[in-house]
Length: 69
Image 1 (spheres, helix red, strand yellow):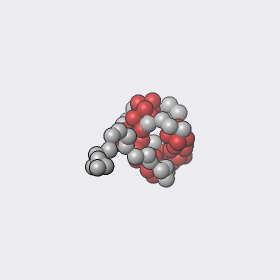
Image 2: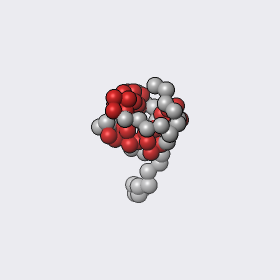
Image 3: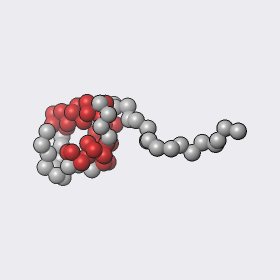
Image 4: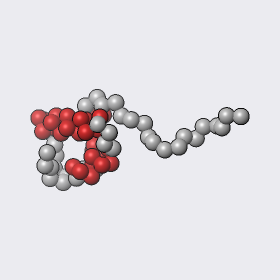
């Protein structure tokens, strides 16, 4: 779906975009890569995914838990 940067996305277009983003996110793409691919901000993509009921993955990287003794 081709979007103009900063254009408002509403109604059926927003629903279609949400579906497309959700499908790609569920296949493993990151929010950052989706944002870059669509020319939108991280926050916009995060909000669209949240609104569509997508179960967002936790952050990656090392956790800061105590070492087992």
